Image (cartoon, rainbow, N blue to C red; front, side, top):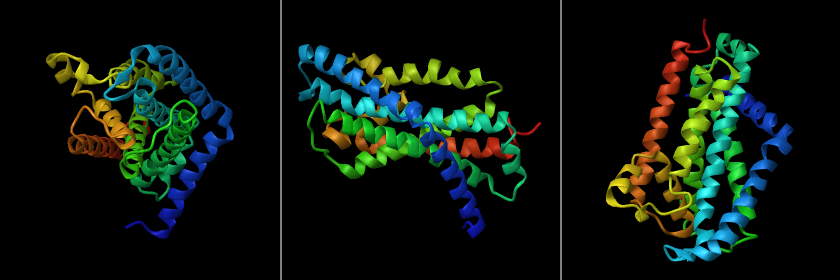
Length: 257
């Protein structure tokens, strides 16, 4: 159990992280909203009106959960990756490492900052989507649970990326060459049931498929995968990344020379 001083340390890190991206909200919160509006207009209205329905709902309604997840993933990841690497680059992280703060507090502080940004952007996109399509959430608890778990998963991924990064260019490699392909192939714009059996089975190795479908179930009540299995997979990935980040931080990978 954490002591009072450790809770204060956690609160301090989280507040610092939130203030960091809120101070430049024009750069951190507005661009994702503009990008998603363009997706709604181009893919939802223009193209979607010609595609008709998918799994019993309009195409624009179908892609809303995927677009929200895409925003959550990108923002939670980039927030932690850029912030922690900046702390490394400016040598600020050394002050945390020599202080009597447990590694778990350092990790949780940065991750919660990323979760807050990812969740804030995600909820903003959901509000913006109401200007294009009307829907009633199928399961609010599931919706916010998946939103939180997805944000925490990719916030921890950003933390691990920042640990290994040696220059600023290194924190853009994973989003560009790994996250972007996995996201676009994760069922954001289509149902994986459209694939033949081989490609559908291959898609099940993509963790983002489970996040998008679990979130789509929470909002619309439709899914391509078993919900219990999807939640289990998301929780397992969270646990694996948390343990990996703790081991790396304990060994001082990327932060001790």
